[in-house]
Structure formats: C-alpha cells, structure tokens
Image (tube, rainbow, N blue to C red; front, side, top):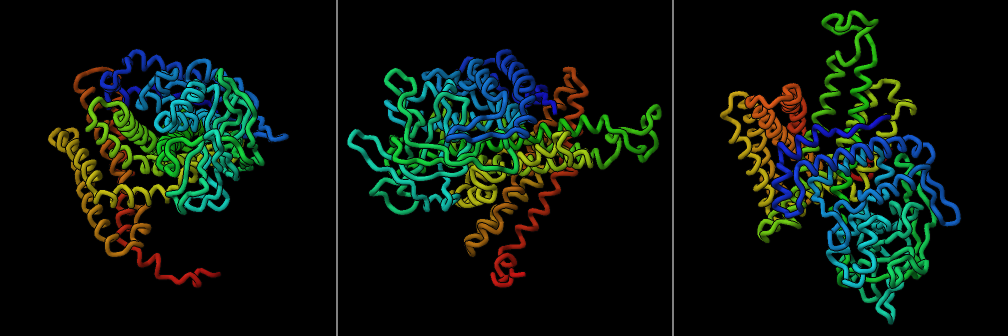
Amino acid sequence: MEYKAPLRDMRFVLHELFDASTHCELLGNGLDRELIDGVLEEAARYTGGEIAPLNRNSDEEGVTLENGEVRTPQGFVEAYRQYVDNGWASMTGPTEYGGQGFPQLVACNFHEMLMGASLSFRIYSGLTEGAVLALYKHGSDELKNAYLEKLVSGSWSGTMCLTEPQAGTDLALLRTKAEPQADGSYKVSGSKIFISGGEHDMSENIVHLVLARLPDAAAGVKGISLLLVPKFIAKADGTPGERNALSCGAIEHKMGIKGAATCVMNFDGATGWVVGEPNQGLACMFTMMNDARFQVGLQGLGIAEQAYQGSLAYARERLQSRGLAGAQHPDKVADPIIVHPDVRRMLLTQKTLVEGSRMLAAYCARQLDLEHGHPEPSYRKAASKRAALLIPIVKAFFTDMGQEVASLGVQVYGGHGYIREWGMEQLMRDSRITQLYEGTNGIQALDYIRRKLLGDGGTELSALQADFSEICDQQVDRPALHDMASKVQVRIGEWRELSAEIIAATGRDAQEIGAVSVDFLQYSAYVLLAGLWLQAAARAQDALEQGSGEEGFYQAKLASADFYLRRVLPRASAHREAIQGGAGCLMALPESDFAF
C-alpha cells in the first residue's frame, strides 16, 4: 500500500490555524514558513519513498532472535542509516548536544508521516526522543556528556524499561533491584517485559532507562529510582566500550507491529547510574512518558491517515452497482462505490476524524513547545498545565480513532479488506497495540479524571472550555458560520455542566471516577474536535471571502466541518447519557453472578 504524506492539510493546520512562523519566532529557533515547508516536503519523500515500501515485508518477515541478538526485517538497517545521516533523528534534540531544536508543532507532522508509512520502523526510534528528554532534564552533567550527543544523533537508541510480569500499570509492584557500588554506579538485576526496541541491529548502542529499587527504598512508587543502563558502557572517547551484563531473553510473537522487536530484557548485575535523585524515578520517568504518550497518539493518527488514503483510492476504483439516484458513470459497467451514501458516510467519518485529530495534535504540540520554550515563566507554567490536560485525551482518543478508521477501511474494501494482500488488515492489527501500551486507554481516562479534572477541581478544564467558547463567540455573528458556532457553543455549555456533575458525583462515591472516566474523555474529545473544526471552517470562510485561491480545498473544509457537526459530534450525546447512568449499574452485580 502506498503512503503519500497529506502535505496540503498539514500546511493548512501549521500555517493557517496555528501560524507556525510566529510560533517559531517566539521560541527563537530561526525557522520560517519556507524552511518548514521544505523540510516537510523532504520528509514526505523519505517516508513515502523509503519507509512505506518496507511496511508490508516487515509484517511478513518479522524479527528473529539468535544467540541473544535480534535481526530486524530486510531494509530496516539501511533505512535507519538514512534516518540518522539525513538528520531526522536529531530533529527535536537540544542544540547544545547536536540537535536541531525543531518545535513539536513542526516535528509532529514528520512523526505522523513515519507512523503512517511504517509503525514498526518508527518504534525503534520513538523512545529515543523520550530518553533524550529525561536525560536532558534530570541527568547529571557526566551522564549527559557521555550519552546525550549519541542519543540525539540517533547513532545510539534508547528504551524505556518499566513493565515486569507482575507489574504493569501498578509500578508499586516492581521488583528490579539496584545495588550501590563504591564508584557511584549501581548493579541492576531483574527482568523487564514488553520492551520496544530492547535489542536490535540498527544502532551501535542501546541505552536503557530502567525503573528499579535501591536497597533502602520505601515500599510503593515512592521507592522507585530511574537508572541509565547501556548495552555497551561508553568509553572516555564516546565510543561503545565493554558489553554490559544484560541481554534479550525472548521476543514476543504479536498480533501486529511484527517488524518491531518487543523484548524480554534480563539485567544480571548490569552497571547503571541513577538519573535524577534516588527514589524520584517516577517523576523522571513521567518526563519521558508524557512524550511517549503524545507519540503513541500520533501513531493512531498516522495509521488512520494511511487507512483513509487506502479507503479513498479503493472507493474511487471499485465498480459495484449503480447509484441510488441512477447511473453516475453510464460509460462504465457500474459506478465506483464512492457514489453510494453509506460509503460516503464511512469516508467522511474517516476524513473528519483524521483531520480533526491532526488539528488537536498541533494544538497539543504547541503547548508542549511553550511549556519548554516560552520566554515568560508564567506562560511556561500555563502551557504545562494545558499540555498535561490534553495528553491523555490525545493518547486515548487518537488511538481509539485509529482503530475505528482502520476498521472502516476494512469495511470499505469489503471482502478484500479481510485479505492480506491489500494491506488494510495489517493496519487494523498494527493499530490495536496503540490502545494498550504506554498506559491503556482506560488508564488514560482515569488520569484525565483523577489527576486533571479532580486534581485542581476543574480549574484548567474550565479554562480550556472558556477558550473554545470564545472561539464560538468570535464566529457566531457571521451568517455563514452562525449555525456551526451555535452548535459548538451548546456543546461547550453542556460540557461545563457535565464536568460539574462529575465532580459532585465522584465526591459522593469514589466508584464514579472509574465508571464515568472513559465516556467523559470521549465526550471531551468530540467537543474539542468540534471547536477545532469550527476554527477550520472560519479560516476556510476567510480564504473564500478573500478570494485567495484553492476554492475546492476550502469548500471541502466547510463541507467536512458541517459533516462532523451533523454526523459525528452527536456521538457525544451517547457518552453523556452513559455518564449520567452512574456507577450503580456497574457495581450492583455480585462477582459470583458473572459466572457462566
């Protein structure tokens, strides 16, 4: 299946919705529109021409483990060498360690392209960027000087080692130990599972960030430390030195992402060093985890874009039956299935969910940039709160969306969608993991309720709602946008009421937190996308009124916004009713009565 980066829509989001040039000027990184567009065009050539052709074969070939060494699918090593040599690996890295300092607002488009072209290939590099963030923010100067430049360049890759057989979401149960040594290092012992890219043949060294317990650590999550444990210990000259006492014990045989090595990693007294302060590992890891969760959201978005592209191409080519209003292409033996209303329903659902999510990704990426790069501390603090609120929504909603859009793709293809040769079933298999790792989507929803809504009594969510309400106020008096703005405004008012109801209900009964969390996250996401589609419609209307060209593109934006508000946004009502159904019906059935 071919992949073609959606450059026109990316440029619309970057420049017409979020004014990337002004954003970059504020951050002081020297990027302008011409340079941004040039980079994304080259990224499109690389992902479409070099990475996408590897996707099908990597699914067929998988990875192999022999004598503790993992061999990646054919073509991965060469493509990764290009990734490093052409500077893609260093795109977001700090400039003082050889990075290019690109903002997330720009880089997230390239990362989406990678996910859409081949999720298996992207997985090997994805956690390296998170490792760079954690080490840059929390590591000692000695560790930074020894490891950061190589990680930033991509010549060394990074992993995140959290999960153990008995400790998944509940990290309080982890057992990996770290024993202090006289030279200030630690000996790390234990086993970690589900480690993406834990062993492979693409980079010359792999740097593991491992959660473990020191001997005097308190029980629970307060006694967890983060340690840097490399496959090869760096020598004084920065080259890989002695092989560390760690190994890949097994690779998982999975439903999807078969070209990505998912490893069991065994640490047998491996040498490591604490990152940050002892017993503060979870706080350090969250620096990495927030980036990872945003990236996983982009995985859902990338796969959804690829599924939509395949669906659209097939719907234009596949001839079946005549249109309900009569033959649309009488010169052909039958009409292409895109003329049929139900196929249109599926395609427009795909299109509006994908493009709406791309807008939300950019909105979130902008906050991540401002959190780290705004010159004013108060703005950095505000952006940090906003990003923290959005991350669980992005991770959970985008990955649920990716699975839905891939499933719709299978449906558009009909029986051919169920057949391997067309590639659509691979997208559906690959996307399924995104709803599970870096915290299942149920965990994201709990985080959204417990830490984000209840954590500050709804203050930050209320501020977000107010910002989108203001967007409605700005557009409601424009005749062409009055109906759209009114619909969104009603939903935002409903969202406010629902937030207050949830805060009150969870205060009465703690079970309500888990009972309403998934539905409330989904409700919030659908309304956020509605607000963003209103913004897109406003920009499109501006362009049409100004006669700026590309009338077809902007008319399509208006039509897509109208479809989303009429046919997708009503899903929020079902989530609202489910929330108001309460926890009682979930908890009333005795456990014994679940028996069959």
